[in-house]
Length: 353
Ligand code: KG4
Ligand code: ZN
Image 1 (cartoon, rainbow, N blue to C red):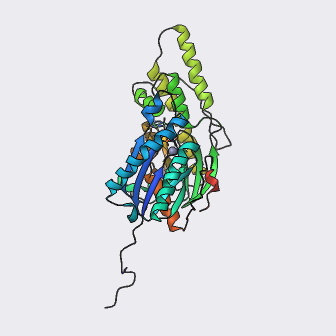
Image 2: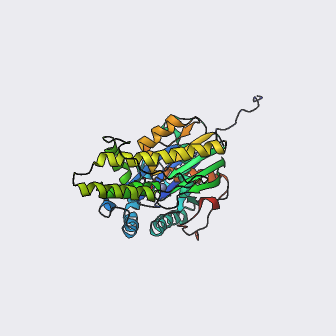
Image 3: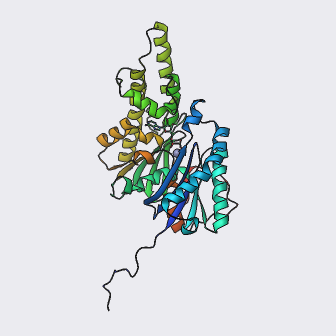
């Protein structure tokens, strides 16, 4: 029988990657098929453990990762209905992140790779955040990302603006000069006596506040693609002190909403300016702060370009996004040795595509 041209003899090969993530305070393991379909995604958050310190306590985080990994790994394999022998590779966050936390995840991954003979792939955590938008099965948004794209990474440790010129090809445009956006949320929450992590607390209380009540400064840093949030944090502190002198009680809702609005204005404003300047075709917003409702709404309302933001559960740290990068890097032939070490300060620009 003559087969029509283009018809495949077999179906597309399937690649299943086990992802492991422990760069900060989430212990996570996931299995992802072909870089798109989540077979399992287990995250053990340590947030409540760190709440008493008002931020992540590094030694506590690495010790907790050690305790969390065995059950999280077991659950992720169980949920995927697979065994270790069924996955094609093991992808693990190599950096950037807290050194002690990264070491725990990397050593677990090395142990699994040694035991199973599966290839080991070191993953950049920020690239993982950027590629989290490819897990579109979750949202039903199957539109492909069009390049070049502008990427905004906003998390507890990073605020970076990048030009994604082509798949896995990045150019740094700017970053925060001081606090990361998520760090600003966490610090201002502490000033307002709101629980850690600050982002969700500020978002919740802002619902009852007026975002125009206080006119906090916006650091536009004209002529650069950089950000700065420490002046905003100081302005909130100064306002709190001023109000306390009057002894009338703090309008926490208004303070939180006005702070949140200032962050949203700058993040959205600068990202969309960059999109125009670099003739971007789409906008990608990722990282823990991309879970913020006001930020998401502002992007969708103000952008003329398609905006890609992961579903809420994939904004904060998870291992499904680690597995997505692992899939692409595996297909490009990346294999890391068992002597691979963590890179706590790994710049995204050092990635070779
Ligand atoms: O990406 P992520 O889970 O961890 C890092 O790699 O840092 O981001 C955590 C950060 C925290 O600073 C947290 O306050 C912030 O993301 N965050 C939010 C929201 N949810 C988490 N910030 C604003 N609004 C939210 N809804
Ligand atoms: Zn992260």
